[in-house]
Length: 355
Ligand code: ASP
Image (cartoon, rainbow, N blue to C red; front, side, top):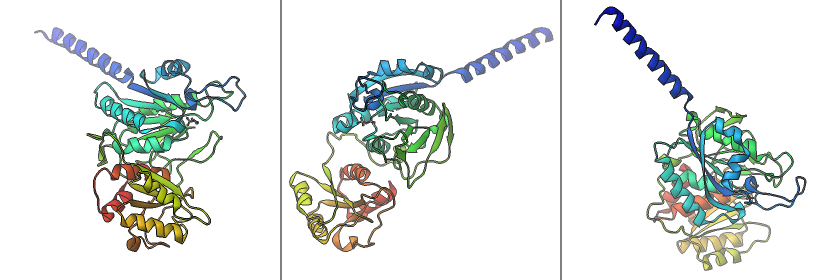
């Protein structure tokens, strides 16, 4: 081979390599959208009325409403359910979690967006955070205003969620919730306003990041064990045990605690006053249930702050568990999964420390 031919072959090879790498850089991530319903898919008769119905718009319509998102990712949608998230239930949860585990195992899926209602998004996100076995980005999003409203917040939330789901830097940060420019961790966020667009806060854990018009900035990883680092699995699980939440209040007695156990609860979460407190009558009833083997967790109805062990209640003596950083609705999710196998009280408390 002459030097001339060798040089031109090298030139061809180089330009092919440059073209290939340019193509790879241009390649959009593959993001699957799983729609479950909620206000983001809601519709009202007019653009300025409060009354509306959740879960009216299908996934294809949702995708078509935000064509800009196609510049961020190759999108395809699946309808998992179309319900207001006040109706969220175990059947949808198990279906969603199983589908997520299937999809995230595929090499041609880079990330997932789940559209959901705001009412119970924190519970679904936290549940998935515990049972999805992948570090790929799984991002839930929602809206406070229906798709037909003046200044609907859904389209930009969806756009931002797609951007985060397709962003490699979002991987390994646990299940995320993207709403109103903020990226929350599943363990931290909570809904704080019935109507305001800025309803979600992460009061104890803080934000995982922010995202503005698709530009994401990440600050930190998840609080607590999550996804691939979680010990919980749905393999072989047909149903989750019943756990009820009972809210503490002035003059509380033990009747609702007893009723919960009568209805089949294997665990009880108290949405306590202050640092997981309740009346002596309620505490006596709770301790009696704990003696019978019902796992009783003290959480708080206060929006932020940990519930610590043995602060005003002697958990060691009464056989109770402190919820640590989890609010009642998330403590219920964790307890349902933790009850899938027998555990000592010490182990149960460890679970609440670690997740
Ligand atoms: N009730 C609605 C739901 O959770 C509220 C919303 O999505 O904002 O589905």
